[in-house]
Length: 423
Ligand SMILES: NC(=O)c1ccc[n+]([C@@H]2O[C@H](COP(=O)([O-])OP(=O)(O)OC[C@H]3O[C@@H](n4cnc5c(N)ncnc54)[C@H](O)[C@@H]3O)[C@@H](O)[C@H]2O)c1
Image (cartoon, rainbow, N blue to C red; front, side):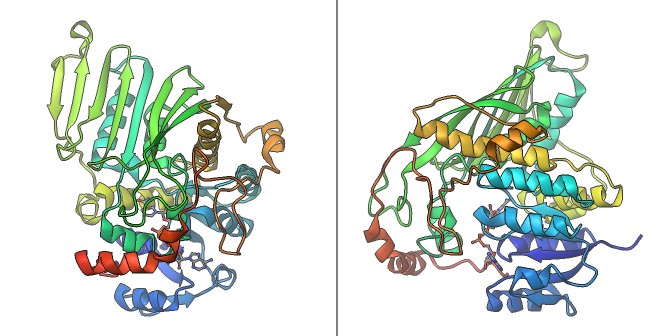
């Protein structure tokens, strides 16, 4: 079988996905980034001598014979490019979030429904080793009926990460509402349980950043959001968006009528699996604490991949769904459901936790309701201004931090050095 001809759009996160596309034996035919130096450096370091390079998407998407694209440009601008690819029947693997306005979500679903191509969300936390184990146990049915699940994605930026990943004051990472980076915490819960959120409420976790808190706190001071959803099977999820507590890590817990499972933070991926004494399966203890060992035909590649193998498996799943012409794990409906939770949770937290109903974009009535809802908290690359605030409560923009942004980055670099993402 011929390898899938693949293009990659956006070469920061895209570098890691490029490595994993190569490990997955995709034929990477084109790369696109408006930063031409980065583009040429990536090409030079990739070992792909013949790969074509583009600085603008409209030329890139016309690349002869390209069958699939990975979209990993700015967080708040994925949807319009995904739609252009789908209109050309080019398969799309899109970084998270799929869309940052409700109207984009509607347009994306409409484009996917018309297209012959596959749309999949690039959500790698679905496939870390501990999450694969949680999924295996949930599928086995020994937990009973699933009632409740929790998810936490906690990533306080260390100083060098700010230099790399928030390179200027108006970068999306400085203005992203705390509820928007939600897929790392929510998507695994949806995959474990099969449930989809129907109603959301959210509370902000607010603590003001000081002047010395590096690049944090320009547009808002929300350290996290505590989000709760009621789901279509009457289960309840409680999760964060992108949290910035002290001590980083991810945590997931699934509770059923007979037992519960979680990964324990700070134990290098160990699992705690507990049952009611009278309902434990044969061969298990009431309390089981272990490091999962999961067999995989691509074990050697998983060990080389980022995010505990998740980056490799996401691309393997994408290529597999193209080859087998099947629905991928995390298709356009699951992706836009996550995005609706992110967007409407922010509206909930701005309104002191008011409940918001999550639409089902399979339904025309729900599409109609949101097709013109263009509220966005981001400054766009085209110079457009935000139309809703990014903060849970009204705050003054810190223009002093904006004016001194480059100076702050220089000070951080002087003190901590710099990481080279192209290595
Ligand atoms: N799943 C994960 O673990 C993970 C990790 C990091 C980032 N991400 C996601 O990846 C996406 C990108 O984030 P990032 O960390 O790479 O930082 P980023 O958003 O700052 O970088 C995006 C890259 O895309 C390029 N780009 C943006 N718009 C472009 C355009 N119109 N034409 C050509 N090039 C363009 C930029 O020059 C830059 O190189 C985000 O959605 C982020 O959420 C996911």
